[in-house]
Image (cartoon, rainbow, N blue to C red):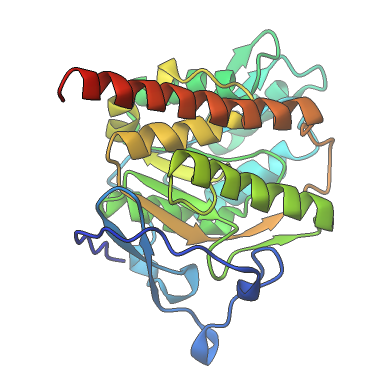
Length: 308
């Protein structure tokens, strides 16, 4: 798997409804996808291969420590399956479960699996403080423990562990961020009602348009970062705690000149447990985008007044 970087001024190719029903499967001649180019507002073209065309020896490496950070709250029905499938797909990774005091015994079950399988650590927290807060704590611990690549992954099985080695491989080959994207050709959402698909798609278009991100899936939760990029973008000062956390993280990395790959995934809605999505989380994300734009606008005016 290779990354091809060249200077480019064109914006990212925006997917359209013709690419599939709200990010459905795109046609790839001969039954498998080849290389695709994604163009971004920062000066780079990143070429990524789909999982179907990647060679087995491209998919991750045991020589680079990668940690999968999984925030949990009442995920006892899912945690065993997700841990086992992650270690089947990528046996060399470490798993860090960040549990916010789940009363259903999620943390206890994860620790028991760690004793059985190895590679699993549990960071116990004593109250529910939001997704962003859990990720900031988890990413900090992963980096302090030596991770060179940090993966964000949901515990509800909506993120397919089989894609994990390809996300890690993209970062190993030079990307600062590899996003498992629903909204590039080959990506899709499964078992979502039309209203939720439209809300997600247009929310991403709103964020990309207002902030100039040129990223198709800025709200995606399945992603891999290089630890160096996380430190460079000062991730611990990111303020958002809900799903706006992913938008602010993407914005920070784009502002820092990071290299981003969007990689097609099939997003499955959860089958066990209760969704954490709510109207307040959506409103928080929409307001966050406007706040970031205002801060960016003020920064540009300040730089112009200073002659920079």
